[in-house]
Amino acid sequence: MNWSLPLGRVFGTEVRAHWSWVLILAFVAVVLGTDLSVEGSLPLGWNQTWAWSTALVGSAGIFASVVVHELGHIVVARRNGMPRPAIVIQLVGSSYSVDARPSGPGAEFRVAASGSALSFVLALLFGGVTLALSAGPVNIDSAPLALQALQFVAFVLALFNGLLGVINLVPGYPLDGAQIAHAILWRRTGDEAKAAEGTVQVSRYVGLGLIGIGVVLVFVADPSLGLCVSLAGWMIAGSSKALDRRSQLRDLVAGLVAGDAIDTDVAVVPPQLTLDVFAAEYLGERSGTAALVERGGEVLGIVGSNQIRRVSRRAWGNTHTQQAMVPIGSVPVVARDSDLWSALEILERAGLDALVVTGDPTAAAAEPTAAAESETHRPVLITRRAAAVKVRERAQARQRELLSAAQTKKGRFRGR
Image 1 (tube, rainbow, N blue to C red):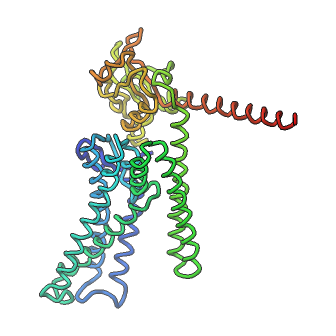
Image 2 (cartoon, helix red, strand yellow; image 1 turned 135 degrees about the vertical axis):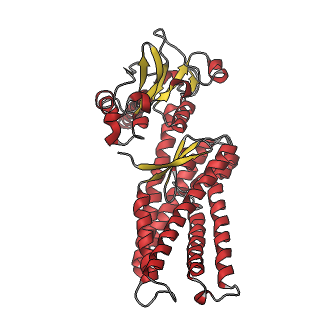
Image 3 (tube, rainbow, N blue to C red; image 1 turned 90 degrees about the vertical axis):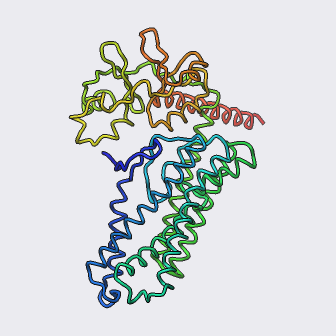
């Protein structure tokens, strides 16, 4: 199922809107329209058409404000050497600032803070328009309907952008504030791993704090507001576990190189194979892998679950692997002896299920799109699946070590 709607490309980044925006914008339009058109509260000279038209424009402006917020991340990230193939715009906490991997704490801080900074600029801009229309020479209550509608929309957008900027500064994942906190801790400690651990703790405490505040609000103030605050806290506290798991994953792959995650069972499919057949026959039990698309001995590209997810399921029967694949020349290349964690980050940024591995460490730097060929003249790949197998093996080995240590300690205790 396609969960996002493509909006276009900005500076090489594909921008998509999450499907939940359909519900969000419908809700906002209904709230604004109801507020403007309720019996006895219509502004002077307004009718139902003006009320609901203004509500629709306001909801569209809210969506545009979130898009501009994310564009701030895109532009600043690109300037700091952190391009990303695609982002999915959500109300708060888009995938951009979380998935894009910074080169240092300074770059991370600039990218994370850019969205809120731009939102504050918009808040000041729309606030200025609101004040200009309210305090201008013309009485807004008797002004033309178009000016009244403009003043209302500007007020709503000023308030929304201010809230969007402030909320995103809360240091809890998946908000931008978590990345800002990580950048600050990274700068102070000089250790990204320690900074990640500290960010997890901060995010968890913020989430638990919001849950507590929400519970108090339920009993002493507005129950609806309290439930919303508690829900936000629950989301942040729960999401902090994702950062914790990421930290644990990084610990598990420490010391491994890209060559350790080479997939020795990569499928080869023809370019005319339809995606419905490909998904059923090649991805059913091979989650996290990718297949080589080959024609007459020539490798054309790779295709995996990340590519077919971008195609509506209804179109799978009419879409071929060649149409959905990533050309082999566009697949990033990593050296066989390079750090596996760095390779997985490249894999994540590229939005792929596999990378090409070269045996010559200098070849990847000199020719970043060149494919290292095996004895069968096919590229050697590392895949998400193969990396997951290595992580699972290490986790099981570590568990056995802990169990053995616990039994040894227990035996010593009994010996006393």
